[in-house]
Amino acid sequence: MIRIIEPRFSEEEKEVILQILNSQQITRGSWTARFQELFADYIGVKHLFTVCSGTVALFVALKAVGVDGKRVVVPAMSFMATIDAVYLAGGVPIVVDVDEHYTMDPNQLEDAVKRYRPKVVVPVHLYGQTADMSAIMELSERYGFYVLEDAAQAHGAEWRGRKAGSLGHLSAFSFYASKNLPMGEGGAIGTNDDKLAREIRKWIDFGEHPAFNIRITEFQAGIGFVQLKSLDERNRRRREIASKYSSLLKEDFHVPQEREGAYHVYHLYTLRHSQRDSIVEYLKNKGIDARVYYPYLLHELRNSEHLPTPNAEAFRKEVFSIPVHPYLSDEEVGFIAESLLQAVRLAQSPLCSV
Image 1 (cartoon, rainbow, N blue to C red):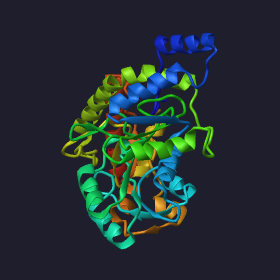
Image 2: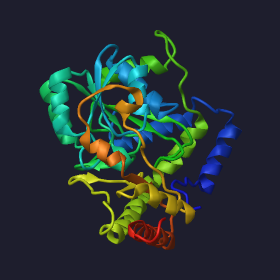
Image 3: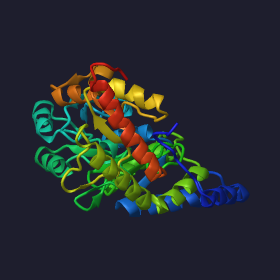
């Protein structure tokens, strides 16, 4: 099976793990501090806090802003953690539609802001591409809401030369095993706002205020530190593979489009086709891992208040993702593309079925 996601680790990560074991400092040590400093510098934020998962990162960021009983706008297409974190933090989620790049539609966002006056807006940088952060931040300045970037799928992605995670008032990352920057588990919260940083710290440092033990271990931090050094190289390979796919598939599929001003890092390479289900089944029979991200919309999943979502409803029926991890060979990329074209021919044939 050609896996859709395949994290790999080198001898350097193994050496770091041994160093940590030999040091007997397996938590709250120098590797966590080093990773936090390196990742903060990489994305361009003043404050960076590691936590145990991306969901917790979203939760703590929302609690730091103070969303109890307040409305929080999220897009219809995302992993369920985006909306679950809002509920867990005591917020009231409002779901809006996505644009042609699968990210929050700024035009409908303005309608939602006028109607609901949210405390926070959570644009999701889905599949590895940022939302239109210029439009969203302009609305933030005009209407006075916080912007929390859900950058769980966007390590190294950029918007107009700035890294995802540095574009809003604060941001949340995941370091789950499937991410472009994998640690196994883990997350982080970033901000340039000193006041927000103080509020975040209250939730993760024991002392004056009640807090959680939501730390990562030194093992995760050490792996992340090594992985971060080659993140840009891996992202470049993802972009190269995506370019090959798009050139081969653009006549038969709706291929992903890079937003003008964006740098897409292809956490997932997501296609659309009206015969999605039969194509996915065909690929799996050929030994190619293909999956639907996501088979639900957030307001349907959690029965939340929402504006009309015609784009998301149409996309949900057709989207599917294929392997794009940086360890694919050119031969595997060619095999996957040819298999997709074969699947389309079979799906469209009146005499055959996939």
